[in-house]
Image (cartoon, rainbow, N blue to C red; front, side, top):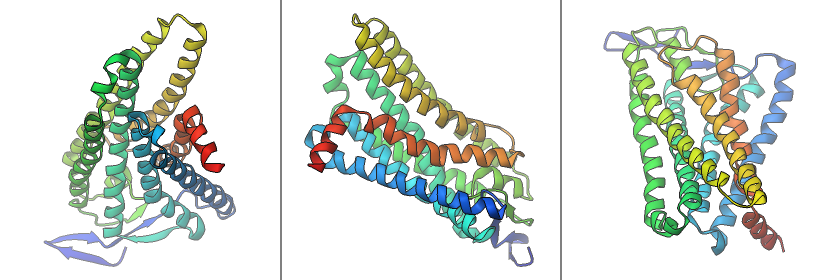
Length: 310
């Protein structure tokens, strides 16, 4: 890159070039149509869920409160990443300013960390509902639910401030080409021309705390739920409960597997094509599947939807 900004004797690039999801012209047109359809579908699904939860009193329960937060969250972080993905498919590689890149990174890290802790809170809610039903109204009273949701959102913001500040403070002397469809941690670390050990350590520790910590809470909750389900006397009840838990575990497993592989590593990732594929999984696939798994297969939500239609 020819243009640069001299700040304190350190040359820094003023913009990055995002290569996008694919550089093949024929494939880009097809992918653009596919991902635009998926983006609109994700927005429609999650908007519908938020509307149903807000407009029906019978859905104003702790479980649906968390599901409403999850839908808002997924609409937000899909909107952070999907427009740049679509723009790359429409125009090919394109330029993004340093400030815009760091802004996108900040919101993405904040929202992805929030989703991790929110999924753990949802798993804990289901654990209390199944394993301690008599104490559920006390343990999951509105104030507790609000505190868990706020902790998720504020915790994500705090982690994002620290990680984004570390990454933005690095020197980027060139090249300035990001082999990705949005500004993500690993591609930016790969472009830094200064020593990134401290930034990588901060990134790794935060990933361990947020990703592994929330995953352990979610897994412990589902293990306890599984044990409770096995003790149910009715085979039909066990099958129904296992079906629900299995669906939730698939979504949680896919999301955490992709994010942990990318972010909970102490070194920079070189296989950026694999990075892009995994990023598509947790930025597109899970937001599309979550409403179907968590809500649109739920009888109470379906009943509310039918009443809304009629």
